Image (tube, rainbow over all chains, first blue to last red; front, side, top):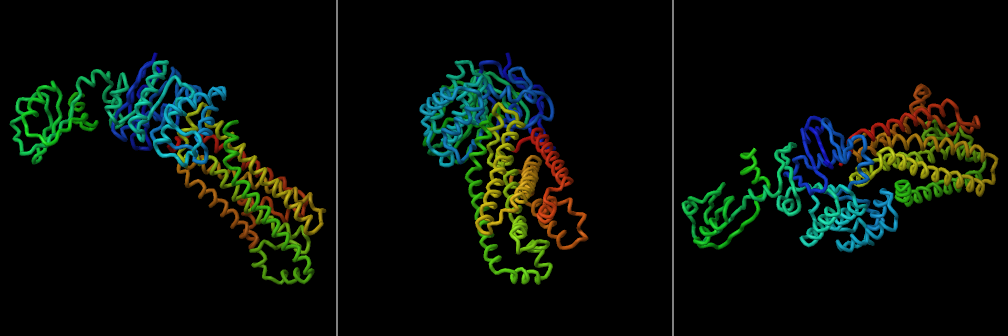
Length: 298
Length: 265
């Protein structure tokens, strides 16, 4: 069964395009990545699904029900963490979380137990005032309020910003645990590596349109690595001649950079023969993927 | 009910200060009255010699200032101004603050309709205004008793306070309506206060110059003019009907526009 299904979902803000003809199918029990550069339409799609804004065309269903007609019924089973977290500054963390819990018709004691459990795991001080929290801590409040009612669908919009690596790890563990218990997750991000770590499938959105839906395993096989080398003496281009899978080489004095996809041994053999002063190998950012892979692969 | 209590708690501190302000305003005014009345007839005669313009500016025309009821009638305009500023700010704020403080991505993804959120907020607003009104009523009666020992016109005060409540309700819903229509939440409070200011200034214009008399339907302050209420001893049914119509219209507009539009997130 599809938990989320959109058909030609379109949203214009006046004349400017938010999203156009978005077709998405998120299956029950999967962790679905939603990736694209900033301003591509990820948040617009999510806010339309949640009924915060209304579509100008097409339709969307969650749990098989139309989002524009059954908003409250659907929202009862959704946990949402917005990309920017804002809560009532005058409240204490515990009061805000209890307030959040009070909407779901849960037993107040159970809510409290769950709040304390999650807060302890994320190292969140419940007695502080929202106003005094750092951005990372506000994000933790967001995570707890999103998960405390054990929703069937968890929607996360750029959730990792502000979290340190340890917290990110715990947060991902928490999500995997909820997923194992049966929750479906829609995870939006502009960072490819974090989507790769967590998701089963991924939709790529650019300029308001879905340009590809792919299994993460397929994507990983095809992933380019970005190499940046610095050498003691300038290197001529010919040293890399015959290396298959290399694209976009630029040489600037003593530094060389290129994208590479292929057997690692082939490239390291060449690199090993150079007089290196520095070597960086990293995942290319999304824009580079789009430039070197998706525009041609489309 | 959770939203209702939350809103009530949020506004409680501000409400205490507003009420305190009203008590102090009434108290100091009545102290003024007591020195006034001690000076006797000479003060009233002095004031009567003031040019009409000055009298109008201070809202003194048509009142017998030697009587406590006359004095209170002049005071009522200031009470009404305070109460309507409170109401307009409350009405626009209680709706617009979720967008202004960017908490709409919290409250409006909960399993409640926007309509229910508004209902809870309006109920909390009305209760706040009732508290404001009752505090004003009780402190009026109390200080009038302390400084003049004249309790003969308690009934008139109750009438004036009913009028005050109507004014509060009108400007509260002016606030909710502007907040519901405007997608720029910071703007709605300014628009609501501009409407309030316009109505207040128009009242003066009408008092200055009888040529403007027909415009009295445009300003709610004229619906509940202390002079008329004290003179006739009751509220005007026609004005009450207009008030009812105005409020109902604004309630409908608030609900229909706010539930249909995109939220500013």
